[in-house]
Length: 467
Image 1 (tube, rainbow, N blue to C red):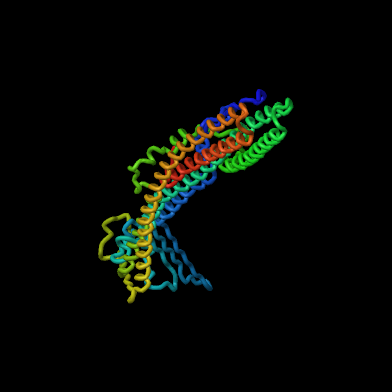
Image 2 (image 1 turned 90 degrees about the vertical axis):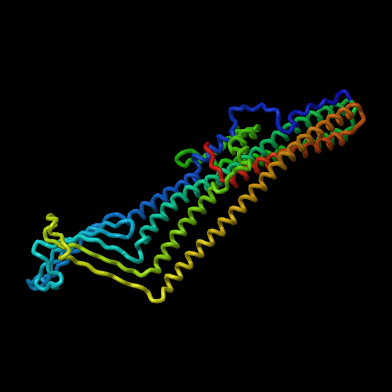
């Protein structure tokens, strides 16, 4: 058996294949996520939620903007001026439903309504309108502004959830790419070993030391490894294309991953640092700071504002208005209580069925959100605890598979020595090698699940890392 080549198993230990690639072409995990967070359209879309909330806040503040109104009307028929009326109003809404108002009236005409008669130079008035019942402590304008502020803060929490989800999805794709690359390198190495074994057996056949059937069996093993290599190439290409979906440049330009770019096979320390796994695995994580809980908290506050507004609608509407009248507004002493225009507006539905129905619906929405918050808290806590235990299990599984692969490697080496001495068969050697390959593939799969579980823990806590 002197023609049998001793097989050197390059790369059958789980963590480190022998690498000859240019490491400058590596795409590190943290660099990859940095590109995703900075340039991916969905991340930019998440920022639009903040812009939308700012726009809604600006819109609600517009309800408190001062307003100028001008009402002008004139009627002339058959050389007769029926009326010429000008009414200019300047209003300033305030926070507690009080509205300040200044008015200028100038009216004339042959058929003017007597109540519209004013001095020749016009009549000025300044006053205030105050709601004494409904709308004093809270009104539509106040509620809209408060809810807009709460929506802005809620949008920030929702933005963190959106960004975390896209980073989570991108992480899983990177791990699939890494798994496909590790499998490719594995099949490249085992094909080299199978080819060396076949060459040695073939030389033995030529000199009559091996049977022709041994060469056939060795050739079957080579073709089997070639088939596995081709399948792994297809899997790597698909994983690379999937990864390209998350790679973008500025100005929304997609990037296609080049064939010479490879993942970093020693990614675990970088993954742990990027996800801050040590902190996530600790027990001092405060769930109330979770973006989902924060978002629900702001949603609850917004519903509480709406409930208070609906409760306020049960009060009678009593609007009181008082205006000082003067012909000479520049002279302060002309403003006196003897010359005024005022009034009271009172309205109150007898059954309040609409108002009581609105209040009931608002309370139901509030209660529904409270139930959702409580359920979310429990679900998050249980999910986090389960993922932490899953991580511990995969840590143990990694150690087991590493030891198992090492044992398979020793068994293969021993079988090869026996084959060289004529005490074994090529069938047993190939069988031992197949066991080693299965163990190695299992180890690569468990590594992928281990990394994916870390990503799930990262996702369950909705962390938004600085990249």
